[in-house]
Length: 420
Ligand SMILES: *Cc1c(COP(=O)(O)O)cnc(C)c1O
Ligand SMILES: [Zn+2]
Image (cartoon, rainbow, N blue to C red; front, top):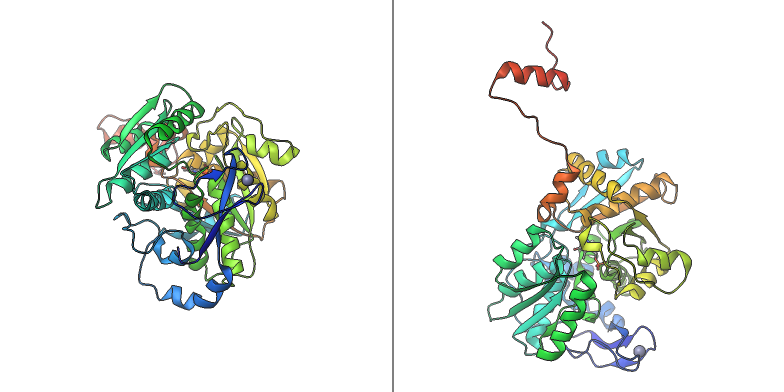
């Protein structure tokens, strides 16, 4: 917290003290989103790239000076961050591009980028003196919260509200981590409302990323880490899928922080990608009209958010970066799951690869040029949602245990050529 100065409402500019349970702006009828303000001048003087590179921690806490938590509060034991960055020349070529790198956030301890926000949430919950922390989630916010809470030394109950459509892998994770799991027999919107009421009534710590200003600060560590991995040479484009809008807002906050403290010169443009069956933010971006709530009709459950709470920060992020937004169909997402897997060995969940489908569209339409440097973040692990992966993938070859039959099938499929 050393460099945190205050919280500022993004709508009216009202200033608040950075208390752990300050969520929204009162002057804006408890709707204005708050942003964590940092003392960039002091950071620029007191912290350097050299100091960062000599930090021995191989997790997100190495970016501590930019993360709004107290140094003494115990961290979760799970090691969040330090996910791999790959060059993907084969995949790039397939998309008509030259320089594509991929950051695989599915490698985080509970399998998604959300671990970065949840790690901050369980630290803030302790600072608030709470012993229970709650959220509503389409899945990954919940699983990451349950896992990170379970890895604390002190007791911290995770109370989770999920919509009934949550994929089996994520539900299994929640139950294995020992969370209290409330499956709301309705959509995400209804699960969210019930969680908000419950949090008010029972006084738990609130890990709903869209209203808790500290969580975006956790999410931003993905891009802080990427910048360090790239030796502070940022790409031309950063590609993210968008649901509530916190992830892409966090990406932009990271860029802003790094630029303001002099770690980077150039900031990337952001490409935000939504699913066609649930794209309220893209619509608002394109039309300039206020957000309209939509239905949630896509296999990409993690970005199926019909009433995104953080859309203002997301829109500001994309606009300020000079970026753009695009939608993709479920068919394109499924195609990308197999393309990404077969070209790179990375297995992403539908929302985790939606960005890639958007990238292909923008590259095909010339919005993104062939020789631009592009970084794409796989936000979640494919093992969380096996049913949709099976729908996207082909079937195995079925044979009886007979080498002759096998040979015939192999020949039919062109897997072998035997000249006899
Ligand atoms: C949460 C999530 C997103 C989108 O993040 P938002 O902050 O909701 O925009 C994308 N992909 C995966 C795998 C997620 O879990
Ligand atoms: Zn306000």
